[in-house]
Image (tube, rainbow, N blue to C red):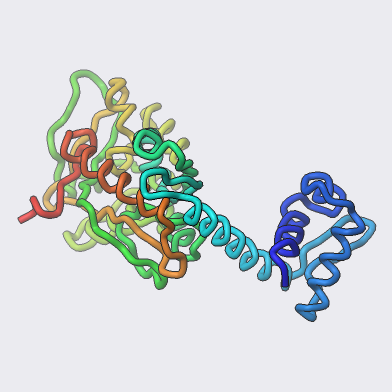
Length: 311
Protein backbone atom coordinates (compact mmCIF):
# COMPACT_ATOMS: atom_id res chain seq x y z
CA UNK A 1 0.00 0.00 0.00
CA UNK A 2 1.39 3.38 -1.04
CA UNK A 3 0.84 6.83 0.39
CA UNK A 4 -0.06 7.97 -3.11
CA UNK A 5 -2.96 5.52 -3.14
CA UNK A 6 -4.22 6.90 0.18
CA UNK A 7 -3.94 10.45 -1.13
CA UNK A 8 -5.80 9.56 -4.32
CA UNK A 9 -8.55 7.71 -2.46
CA UNK A 10 -9.06 10.56 0.03
CA UNK A 11 -9.10 12.98 -2.89
CA UNK A 12 -11.91 11.08 -4.64
CA UNK A 13 -13.96 10.99 -1.42
CA UNK A 14 -13.42 14.68 -0.64
CA UNK A 15 -14.04 15.93 -4.18
CA UNK A 16 -17.03 13.71 -4.82
CA UNK A 17 -15.78 11.79 -7.83
CA UNK A 18 -12.93 10.83 -10.12
CA UNK A 19 -13.18 13.75 -12.55
CA UNK A 20 -12.98 16.47 -9.89
CA UNK A 21 -10.33 14.58 -7.93
CA UNK A 22 -8.17 14.06 -11.03
CA UNK A 23 -8.33 17.77 -11.77
CA UNK A 24 -7.49 18.82 -8.20
CA UNK A 25 -4.71 16.24 -7.83
CA UNK A 26 -3.26 17.00 -11.27
CA UNK A 27 -3.31 13.35 -12.33
CA UNK A 28 -4.82 11.64 -15.37
CA UNK A 29 -8.19 10.07 -14.63
CA UNK A 30 -7.21 6.59 -15.93
CA UNK A 31 -4.15 6.58 -13.67
CA UNK A 32 -6.31 7.65 -10.72
CA UNK A 33 -8.85 4.89 -11.41
CA UNK A 34 -6.09 2.30 -11.72
CA UNK A 35 -4.56 3.27 -8.37
CA UNK A 36 -7.94 3.01 -6.62
CA UNK A 37 -8.62 -0.37 -8.25
CA UNK A 38 -5.22 -1.65 -7.11
CA UNK A 39 -5.98 -0.43 -3.60
CA UNK A 40 -9.34 -2.23 -3.56
CA UNK A 41 -7.70 -5.45 -4.77
CA UNK A 42 -5.11 -5.25 -2.02
CA UNK A 43 -7.76 -4.62 0.64
CA UNK A 44 -10.08 -7.24 -0.88
CA UNK A 45 -13.12 -4.99 -0.54
CA UNK A 46 -14.96 -2.35 -2.52
CA UNK A 47 -14.30 1.20 -1.34
CA UNK A 48 -16.22 3.12 -3.99
CA UNK A 49 -19.33 2.43 -6.04
CA UNK A 50 -19.14 3.84 -9.57
CA UNK A 51 -22.38 4.39 -11.46
CA UNK A 52 -24.35 6.72 -13.76
CA UNK A 53 -25.37 8.81 -10.75
CA UNK A 54 -21.75 9.34 -9.74
CA UNK A 55 -19.35 7.89 -7.21
CA UNK A 56 -20.54 6.76 -3.78
CA UNK A 57 -18.44 5.70 -0.82
CA UNK A 58 -19.25 2.25 0.58
CA UNK A 59 -19.45 1.53 4.31
CA UNK A 60 -16.01 -0.07 4.09
CA UNK A 61 -14.81 3.00 2.21
CA UNK A 62 -16.04 5.33 4.95
CA UNK A 63 -14.18 3.38 7.62
CA UNK A 64 -11.04 3.21 5.51
CA UNK A 65 -11.25 6.94 4.73
CA UNK A 66 -11.12 7.85 8.44
CA UNK A 67 -8.02 5.71 8.91
CA UNK A 68 -6.36 6.87 5.71
CA UNK A 69 -6.96 10.52 6.55
CA UNK A 70 -5.39 10.05 9.97
CA UNK A 71 -2.35 8.32 8.42
CA UNK A 72 -1.84 11.19 5.97
CA UNK A 73 -2.13 13.75 8.77
CA UNK A 74 0.44 11.87 10.85
CA UNK A 75 2.82 11.69 7.88
CA UNK A 76 2.49 15.44 7.38
CA UNK A 77 3.19 16.00 11.08
CA UNK A 78 6.25 13.75 10.89
CA UNK A 79 7.54 15.69 7.90
CA UNK A 80 6.99 18.99 9.70
CA UNK A 81 8.78 17.70 12.80
CA UNK A 82 11.72 16.48 10.74
CA UNK A 83 12.08 19.83 8.99
CA UNK A 84 11.61 21.94 12.11
CA UNK A 85 14.44 23.09 14.33
CA UNK A 86 13.83 23.89 17.97
CA UNK A 87 13.70 27.60 17.20
CA UNK A 88 11.63 27.41 14.01
CA UNK A 89 8.60 25.17 14.42
CA UNK A 90 6.24 24.89 11.46
CA UNK A 91 3.03 23.10 10.54
CA UNK A 92 -0.72 23.26 11.01
CA UNK A 93 -2.35 22.25 14.28
CA UNK A 94 -6.05 21.71 14.85
CA UNK A 95 -7.81 22.32 18.16
CA UNK A 96 -11.42 21.93 19.25
CA UNK A 97 -13.29 24.53 21.28
CA UNK A 98 -16.83 24.57 22.66
CA UNK A 99 -18.77 27.25 20.80
CA UNK A 100 -19.40 29.10 24.06
CA UNK A 101 -15.66 29.60 24.50
CA UNK A 102 -14.59 29.97 20.88
CA UNK A 103 -15.90 33.51 20.44
CA UNK A 104 -13.87 34.63 23.44
CA UNK A 105 -10.71 32.57 22.95
CA UNK A 106 -10.19 31.99 19.23
CA UNK A 107 -8.66 35.39 18.47
CA UNK A 108 -6.19 35.55 21.39
CA UNK A 109 -5.15 31.92 20.88
CA UNK A 110 -4.45 32.35 17.17
CA UNK A 111 -2.64 35.66 17.78
CA UNK A 112 -0.52 34.37 20.66
CA UNK A 113 0.53 31.22 18.81
CA UNK A 114 1.31 33.22 15.67
CA UNK A 115 3.36 35.77 17.63
CA UNK A 116 5.41 33.05 19.35
CA UNK A 117 5.69 30.67 16.39
CA UNK A 118 5.07 32.36 13.02
CA UNK A 119 5.48 29.03 11.24
CA UNK A 120 2.56 27.38 13.05
CA UNK A 121 -0.95 27.73 11.62
CA UNK A 122 -3.90 27.16 13.97
CA UNK A 123 -7.21 25.75 12.73
CA UNK A 124 -10.08 25.85 15.22
CA UNK A 125 -13.12 23.57 15.15
CA UNK A 126 -16.00 24.71 17.34
CA UNK A 127 -19.20 22.97 18.35
CA UNK A 128 -21.41 22.20 21.31
CA UNK A 129 -19.56 20.91 24.34
CA UNK A 130 -20.46 17.26 23.86
CA UNK A 131 -19.59 17.49 20.15
CA UNK A 132 -16.19 18.91 21.05
CA UNK A 133 -15.65 16.02 23.45
CA UNK A 134 -16.53 13.48 20.77
CA UNK A 135 -14.17 15.17 18.30
CA UNK A 136 -11.25 15.00 20.73
CA UNK A 137 -12.10 11.45 21.83
CA UNK A 138 -12.05 10.31 18.19
CA UNK A 139 -8.60 11.81 17.64
CA UNK A 140 -9.80 14.17 14.91
CA UNK A 141 -7.88 17.13 16.39
CA UNK A 142 -4.53 17.62 18.10
CA UNK A 143 -6.08 18.82 21.35
CA UNK A 144 -8.95 20.88 22.66
CA UNK A 145 -10.67 22.58 25.54
CA UNK A 146 -13.48 21.01 27.56
CA UNK A 147 -15.58 21.88 30.58
CA UNK A 148 -16.39 18.84 32.72
CA UNK A 149 -14.87 16.07 30.64
CA UNK A 150 -17.41 13.32 31.37
CA UNK A 151 -17.06 9.74 30.17
CA UNK A 152 -14.46 10.07 27.44
CA UNK A 153 -12.36 6.94 26.99
CA UNK A 154 -9.45 8.10 24.84
CA UNK A 155 -8.57 11.49 26.32
CA UNK A 156 -5.94 12.69 28.77
CA UNK A 157 -6.79 15.91 30.57
CA UNK A 158 -5.08 18.76 32.37
CA UNK A 159 -7.43 20.79 34.62
CA UNK A 160 -6.68 24.51 34.32
CA UNK A 161 -9.32 26.47 36.23
CA UNK A 162 -12.84 26.44 37.63
CA UNK A 163 -15.50 28.62 36.03
CA UNK A 164 -18.76 29.69 37.68
CA UNK A 165 -21.98 30.09 35.73
CA UNK A 166 -24.20 33.15 35.43
CA UNK A 167 -27.86 33.95 34.90
CA UNK A 168 -28.14 36.24 31.87
CA UNK A 169 -31.29 38.36 31.44
CA UNK A 170 -32.31 41.41 29.42
CA UNK A 171 -31.25 44.59 31.20
CA UNK A 172 -34.02 46.99 32.16
CA UNK A 173 -32.75 50.09 33.93
CA UNK A 174 -29.62 50.12 36.06
CA UNK A 175 -27.21 47.17 35.73
CA UNK A 176 -27.87 44.36 38.22
CA UNK A 177 -24.60 42.70 39.21
CA UNK A 178 -25.85 41.11 42.44
CA UNK A 179 -25.60 37.38 43.05
CA UNK A 180 -28.75 35.30 42.75
CA UNK A 181 -29.70 32.20 44.75
CA UNK A 182 -30.24 29.12 42.63
CA UNK A 183 -33.75 28.57 44.01
CA UNK A 184 -34.85 31.93 42.54
CA UNK A 185 -34.35 30.58 39.03
CA UNK A 186 -37.33 28.22 39.32
CA UNK A 187 -39.75 31.08 38.70
CA UNK A 188 -38.01 32.34 35.57
CA UNK A 189 -38.76 31.31 31.96
CA UNK A 190 -35.45 29.90 30.78
CA UNK A 191 -34.02 29.41 27.30
CA UNK A 192 -31.68 26.43 27.45
CA UNK A 193 -30.05 23.81 25.21
CA UNK A 194 -31.20 20.20 25.48
CA UNK A 195 -30.02 17.70 28.07
CA UNK A 196 -27.08 16.53 25.96
CA UNK A 197 -25.39 19.78 26.98
CA UNK A 198 -23.59 19.70 30.32
CA UNK A 199 -24.82 23.10 31.53
CA UNK A 200 -28.46 22.01 31.25
CA UNK A 201 -27.89 18.75 33.12
CA UNK A 202 -25.83 20.40 35.84
CA UNK A 203 -28.46 23.10 36.35
CA UNK A 204 -31.34 20.62 36.61
CA UNK A 205 -29.45 18.30 38.95
CA UNK A 206 -28.48 21.14 41.27
CA UNK A 207 -32.05 22.46 41.33
CA UNK A 208 -33.45 19.00 42.15
CA UNK A 209 -31.02 18.65 45.06
CA UNK A 210 -32.48 21.75 46.72
CA UNK A 211 -36.08 20.74 46.01
CA UNK A 212 -36.74 23.17 43.18
CA UNK A 213 -37.82 22.75 39.57
CA UNK A 214 -36.75 24.61 36.45
CA UNK A 215 -39.07 26.21 33.94
CA UNK A 216 -37.44 25.67 30.55
CA UNK A 217 -39.81 27.66 28.37
CA UNK A 218 -37.73 27.34 25.19
CA UNK A 219 -35.25 24.65 24.21
CA UNK A 220 -32.71 25.83 21.65
CA UNK A 221 -29.46 24.24 20.51
CA UNK A 222 -27.97 27.22 18.70
CA UNK A 223 -26.00 29.63 20.87
CA UNK A 224 -26.77 32.42 18.39
CA UNK A 225 -30.50 31.75 18.79
CA UNK A 226 -30.27 31.67 22.59
CA UNK A 227 -28.35 34.94 22.57
CA UNK A 228 -30.86 36.69 20.31
CA UNK A 229 -33.87 35.47 22.33
CA UNK A 230 -32.37 36.57 25.65
CA UNK A 231 -31.41 39.92 24.14
CA UNK A 232 -35.02 40.35 22.99
CA UNK A 233 -36.27 39.73 26.53
CA UNK A 234 -38.07 36.47 25.70
CA UNK A 235 -36.42 34.66 28.58
CA UNK A 236 -33.22 34.19 30.57
CA UNK A 237 -30.44 31.65 30.25
CA UNK A 238 -27.67 30.09 32.34
CA UNK A 239 -24.27 29.94 30.64
CA UNK A 240 -20.62 30.69 31.22
CA UNK A 241 -19.21 34.19 30.93
CA UNK A 242 -17.57 33.97 27.47
CA UNK A 243 -20.84 32.89 25.85
CA UNK A 244 -22.56 36.21 26.54
CA UNK A 245 -19.84 38.65 27.66
CA UNK A 246 -20.16 41.01 24.68
CA UNK A 247 -23.89 41.50 25.36
CA UNK A 248 -23.08 42.44 28.95
CA UNK A 249 -20.44 44.95 27.86
CA UNK A 250 -22.86 46.45 25.32
CA UNK A 251 -25.44 47.01 28.06
CA UNK A 252 -28.00 44.60 26.63
CA UNK A 253 -27.87 42.00 29.40
CA UNK A 254 -27.38 41.64 33.12
CA UNK A 255 -25.09 38.88 34.38
CA UNK A 256 -25.73 37.56 37.90
CA UNK A 257 -23.55 34.88 39.41
CA UNK A 258 -25.53 31.91 40.73
CA UNK A 259 -24.92 31.05 44.40
CA UNK A 260 -26.34 28.91 47.23
CA UNK A 261 -25.23 26.62 45.74
CA UNK A 262 -22.91 27.98 43.11
CA UNK A 263 -22.77 26.30 39.73
CA UNK A 264 -19.28 25.67 38.44
CA UNK A 265 -17.34 23.39 36.13
CA UNK A 266 -13.68 22.55 35.59
CA UNK A 267 -12.13 23.79 32.36
CA UNK A 268 -9.55 21.33 31.06
CA UNK A 269 -7.10 20.98 28.22
CA UNK A 270 -7.69 17.61 26.57
CA UNK A 271 -5.49 15.52 24.27
CA UNK A 272 -6.56 12.36 22.41
CA UNK A 273 -4.46 9.46 23.67
CA UNK A 274 -4.34 7.86 20.21
CA UNK A 275 -2.82 10.95 18.58
CA UNK A 276 0.52 12.00 20.11
CA UNK A 277 1.26 15.72 20.01
CA UNK A 278 3.74 16.86 17.38
CA UNK A 279 6.40 19.41 18.28
CA UNK A 280 4.24 22.17 16.79
CA UNK A 281 1.14 20.97 18.64
CA UNK A 282 3.07 20.76 21.93
CA UNK A 283 4.26 24.34 21.49
CA UNK A 284 0.73 25.52 20.67
CA UNK A 285 -0.68 23.58 23.65
CA UNK A 286 1.65 25.45 26.01
CA UNK A 287 0.64 28.80 24.49
CA UNK A 288 -3.05 27.94 24.89
CA UNK A 289 -2.49 27.05 28.55
CA UNK A 290 -0.73 30.37 29.13
CA UNK A 291 -3.55 32.21 27.34
CA UNK A 292 -6.20 30.60 29.55
CA UNK A 293 -4.33 31.43 32.74
CA UNK A 294 -3.83 35.04 31.61
CA UNK A 295 -7.53 35.43 30.75
CA UNK A 296 -8.50 34.37 34.27
CA UNK A 297 -5.80 36.25 36.18
CA UNK A 298 -6.40 39.48 34.24
CA UNK A 299 -10.14 39.32 34.96
CA UNK A 300 -11.24 38.88 31.36
CA UNK A 301 -12.97 35.59 32.19
CA UNK A 302 -15.47 36.54 34.89
CA UNK A 303 -16.30 33.65 37.15
CA UNK A 304 -12.97 31.98 36.46
CA UNK A 305 -10.93 30.91 39.50
CA UNK A 306 -7.54 29.20 39.37
CA UNK A 307 -7.74 25.77 41.00
CA UNK A 308 -4.96 26.58 43.46
CA UNK A 309 -7.02 29.54 44.72
CA UNK A 310 -10.03 27.37 45.64
CA UNK A 311 -10.05 26.39 49.30
